[in-house]
Length: 297
Image (cartoon, rainbow, N blue to C red; front, side, top):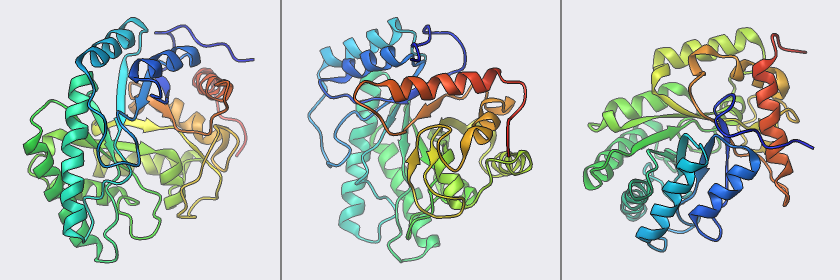
């Protein structure tokens, strides 16, 4: 059985944890898994609005995370938010919801908020990207905090934006508030979108493209997820680390990439009730970081 790693030791890895029972409970779960990084939803992922976070809950959460040695805190925004939508009502609700999410992050001391760019709903990529940029500007102007919004890579399903790194870069470029916009790279998503993260040559091409388009220094978080499906499938199906189509070779590339050494790697992989799968996934990432050369593929 994998034992939790000592907080503060080894690579900056962690997992998305449930905040059921309150945000401080997410810290307890992270500690049990041996996390140095933690991602949470600060409200329900499938609702527009959430119960306000009390000052006491926010304070206990911040203190607990600091005392646990969790050095990287991230929030993921609700899935309903769609700044790219061609529906004006949905866009307005999305902006309002994003403002609230940013405020919740500020209250809890979470510096980064991951956001799916959303779907243009068949209206075209150019129009969709422009709406995302304008939505970011409106939300960030209404929520003047130090919280940074991270546009996440997409798998390429349907009319969703962000399956090409150049699209993420363009949305940020069009935003006036670009100083508060950066990026989150999801290994499952880029794999599903067609990028090769498994071979050494493919990985180098991905890193080089990310450097040219996004700027490696603007990648604030990596979601370390294996994939149930093959490369280029355009389907977002996460699998446990080392058990999917990416496999250990792909995650060796990630864990031994100097340009991303200080970037937190966060699991969003299937969980079991006991939390064993998270502990095993994190332990595997740590082993891969120590391994001198990839195996297989």
